[in-house]
Length: 196
Image (cartoon, rainbow, N blue to C red):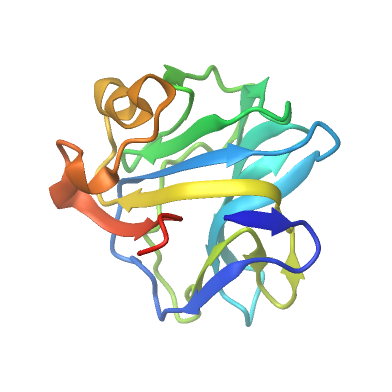
């Protein structure tokens, strides 16, 4: 899927999306120009308030997660830049207590970490996330449009191990997530194969 950075995105209204999941993984293949310094790959949020959101994307050329569940903002950041006009496999995992970021099958050292709680999509409260998005963050307004390529976005209800992330990376050739050894934990899959 190619996004223009202006008004292209995918969205679906979904009440309390995966709100009971305390661990999981997001995987996506992305490509963007060096001129792009920020944008959302995958997000889920509440359009009525800025207190509930989960935004996995890029800021200043590096992978970032911003997450808030009516509590302290969580922000973690990779150390490897991905805005180099090359295809990259980007993965975020959470085990319920810690987030991890992988780029091209390698575990990243986190450059910054504020409140790295690994809280995943687990939400408690009255106003919870009501949408799922690729290529944009949708709260009260649309922000963080992605400019470039996003494909093979998969969401899992388990925190994949390094070996399982490398299985998805498949030496740089995107693996069909439905054939992965943990396919039973696949809970969302957005492809650009002309069929699904």
